[in-house]
Image (cartoon, rainbow, N blue to C red):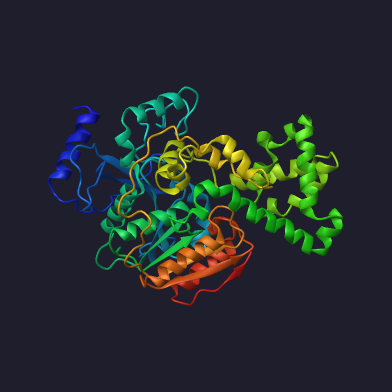
Length: 479
């Protein structure tokens, strides 16, 4: 029997009955991405109906899960289990592997379960051939794979709906419920960025057998146009301007520049536009994008005023240093076969649910973006990447823009200088959850921190997490 009929048979069997969560069976991983880890997976329906049952006309999919056993003496049980849900959309669980030391300090004696949500990593992909591990680009698209991948998806536009947030949430619910059992240690769930949206969607589907939830870099309310993805450059610019203002307020930084940082920056921008040789030195040949990206890494962010000063003087020593810092930071997250972001999944989910501009202003063009961002000093490439889509979208379901009826005790970790999920947006989401009386939700503010607290502010993450699992009140922290 070939693979396709076998998967179709499994889907038909799943459709015949209600879906029951099954426990995972872990064995030593066949790869060397994370030595000592265990691997497993779950066959899930390609599509679920509104009640969570398999839809019979969709092929089954596979969701990959990696497990890191608890660091406890032999024969001793784990103190708890932590599920880690990655961001994106399009990001695999591999982003957590190199952060295991911080996780072990924050959750001593815990085991860690890390899924790749559908469409990412080693789980079923949108483009089965082009995103396979053994394709020319590996898990990433390369060369002609872009065209054939996009063309294949557009031939079956309804296929996009199988990779919606709700479908991924059904998978996550099945995984977590399958691992519950008698005498098991307490279970917690952690999500970061888009992962917080996926966890909240999972909780909309019904209660989870978990003791608590940690939401790192919480997404804003889904229906608030101030913070949707079309506004990402404005979010980035707001944080960037705060960074420049901090230099002006700092005696040493201001003395080093001798003028307001924004004034210096605007002069450098004018020079870059007039001097192709200067612009060619900037990665991507876009200074606004480059500095916007620096905001994600605290060590690089701190050098922005001094980089501008050297660019103004025609020097490039600081630029080389900053590039090295950014490269080192990226290397800190590791590089694994399943690491590449799934661009098709980013495109489909973002334009279907998180880009209100796509539905409110379908005629929005690159020229409109240019006018919209003309006065900004820090920008993101994301609005242009999403422009025009290129892939089908799926219709929003009843869960869009809504909140869970009930949530377990929840801790939100949010940086005040987050250029991706803005602090004000996270506050609004926390307020909405609190006012809905869904459950106890506490906000731990991490002052000066950017996105992804686990990675960018590990000491604050450790403090907040250990307090949370000990049942202590949340405290703020400063990077």
